Amino acid sequence: MTLHALPELPLPPDTVEQRLVASDGVAIRAARWPARVRPALGTVCLFQGRGEQIEKYFPVVETLRDRGFAVATFDWRGQGGSDRLGRKRELGHVADFRHYTRDIEVFRRQMVLPDCPGPYFALAHSMGGNIVLGAAPKLAPWFRRIVLSAPFLDFGSVPFRRSTVRRLAMAMRLIGLGRSSIPGPTRKLAVVREFDGNPLTSDPEQFRIMTALTRIYPELWLGPPTNGWIHAAAVAMDRLEAEDFPDRIQIPIMIVNCGADTLVSVDANERMARRLRSVAYVLVPGARHEIMFEAPVYADQFWAAFDSFVPGSKD
Image (cartoon, rainbow, N blue to C red; front, side, top):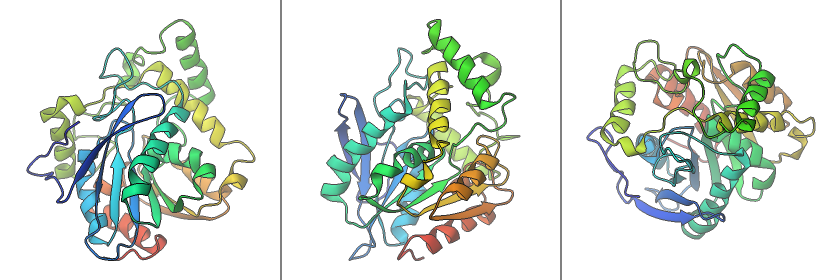
């Protein structure tokens, strides 16, 4: 579970890596970093998106430490350096998004609470945003505030309604193809190789670094999701649309929506912002999905919003 580095992605100083074991026996790769100031302003817990890994977030870790925070993060089960769940390690699979909350719990219990200073804040991107938002009713005693970056609350540019996607994915599970990759024409939406037309970032250097990491360390790469993962994602989205869901969230939440996002639904994120009781909503026009790895004109807007929402944050 060793962390890797590139010249463009150096290992941050004072890294502490740890192997965690979830309640169902899945091994989770995690890492933490102390704040550069004393006393620390608290700890920001980073929750990645689908297919990401700790190494990708080294620059974000340093940005947060520059602001006076300690940082802790981990690789979700099924990706990065954590245990993979299917027969083919390159496929992203999970049977139920609620299984991801086992990763959050072992991370909280074995790393954050014993070794990281409070207060605690969550910064969750894309799939991580879906998972953390879904778990938010149970996270109130832990997190003071939650920041959701381009949360995955509905599918982006797909030609079908979510109900249709859910039924098709369920049908594939019923005929024994739940752990098989999604059909060929849709795989290009999940695996991005070329900069031209990519949905992630308009910054060519950031894109080059992203793709270099998994090219040089292919064991960190994650290919397309399985039919079972797609079904689990659709069901998780349905849960978030329950009428009473907003009433069960007691934590202030900020949603940062990327105006040019095609991977997740911009409209679904805006609708959720309207439903939540204690919410800040920021739309960054022109930004693509990976706003923390976007061109400065977009990334700077994200960090300005973060600084205004998270108590004590400073440059």
